[in-house]
Length: 366
Image (cartoon, rainbow, N blue to C red):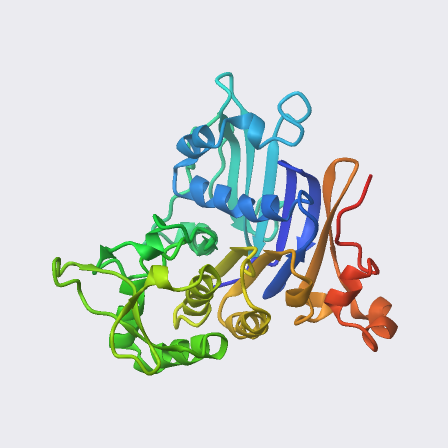
């Protein structure tokens, strides 16, 4: 499945315009609070909702068009997005309606020759409340659209921040909810059980990797609940002890790390894995392991991750890092290059250059 190799965004949240920005297999975004990292990441949630024909409900829940338009509806009249997947692409135009929502006024999936509209498969000029993109495995005319839609459906945005007592990862879940890891890891126990039964070597790799950052951890206990055989909850053993512990007996950082390891080492990842500040609460050792998992996962899935951690950035090559800042109230995106930093990198890591403001990725006054 082709990776997302180029993206154009206009008028979305803090992003006034980003034109034909190139993406690689591994992309790590760093910047200060409010720079626009999370806004960039949230675009993919919007695309998920459009392709899933849930646009109207999503916009309503997020507070209406004003929350999506750069500077609000008085400043920006439309949101334009163009996504390129190798020879294929998908683009759309959103405009506010009289009720404060957003409607699709253009939507296309096509081959790379946009200007000539070659193989243009879908387009809408009248406002549409939901996506009109459809595909058929039997209709060769829609081959281009199938490729674009399959790529779009492969976006997965993960957010493991919630480790409160009512977080799904700590509560019992359905035993058969195991086809893929959910965005909040609420089905982690069922997912790990499935891996243990169908891919024992990959399960063992996940367990052993967790032990690198949590040496007290022995293994999971992945059995149906005695009081409800159709349910399962996350239980584990500590080395040297034979009785079970529950998820809430793990630190928040350890629990998030477990979810990240399962996500990044799963044998059949989504086409694009998107993470917002995955380093939250992690020990420095866990951050080093996380970076190595990013590199390994990027061989199977395109990885986009936002971070504020200099320690995490230090584990990557400059070309894998995108700096996000603001100028004139708008987010700017620039990929680092090794050549201008070569002399600095002889003595300092990338993270240290961020802390020294050689790489300007921290708070600044405009």
